[in-house]
Image (cartoon, rainbow, N blue to C red; front, side, top):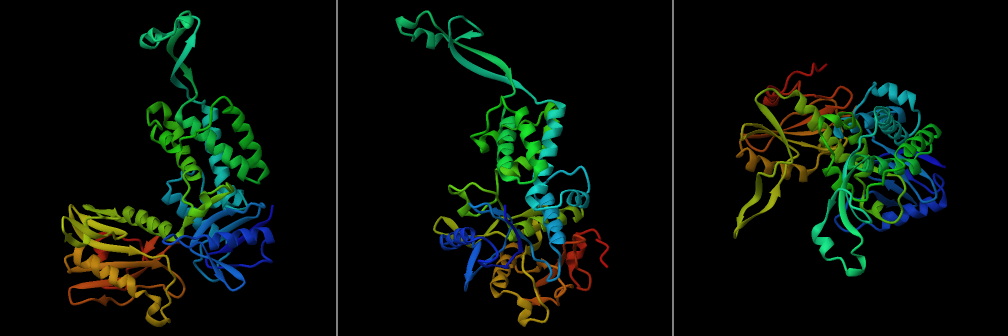
Length: 418
């Protein structure tokens, strides 16, 4: 198996991967439909990776790992550790040991680390005992067992009156949680290339051998029990969701079912920032993600048009106090207009008018880099509506508000910024 590691916006050339893998990637780049997120872009004789991160396997077995780009000199290990931390927070992945220790123990790709953690959780379930539940079974038998299905029995033809239509309950491990775990185990058994992971996955599959795999994933997730006797299954659920309900680009949903754990970095950063800010909010403030309270056009006939959905709003009761938008982009204080987008400011202006009635502050949040390490001077739409462009440090999980005379500091507990 060929392994290739790169970072966001890096280029893939023919010499980097096999000819078959490069041809397949070219096909993906050409198949993007209008309105869908771009994953690969033609750039001369190479292909440029856009803002998706994670793992991608080609049909010839080449495994491509894409890591986030936060600095020009960062090592793959640091980038992988950062991505792992963000996934842990956003997808609520449970840990029984420090992230650093897990990464040191499982040297290799993000996929193998994820598989190892998932298998550890399933091993704990097997050691505690696979839970069974009563399953209603309907059958035609030569004797009565359980309850006779009278209506069906009456409709029996004369030639089959000696057979009984019955139903009964049987205590079996065939329940939604076990079916989902079985499906996830089958997936990682095919995907993993690490010998220890493969061995453990096969052993665990043997323990689930009598249980069918889930064929209705969403329906089975809705049946996942939260009762007290299932509490030790709880830690495995986020891992199963991450494996089976993957945030993948459209083109990975076709016939090829290789590894496809890809995440849009913009959404991952947005949700990570929201999770960290929520932890720092003071009472009585609350953080709402993707609020849809207002539209750009309040009324056109009988309906509103062009819904406005800021990434985050801080509210006190029903009143919006602060609007925040997170952007996964590297700013440069030495560049023209710092690399900021005019379209983002048009968008924020609309948010400010609708959510703040034209009076207040808004935060435009970007990742902290060497070129963008402190809050910028304020951007005033007018004397009453202001935008602050603020760095968010992914190492310390701090919103770096110090140095700017913004009222936003009053909503949060101190991060101890240095």
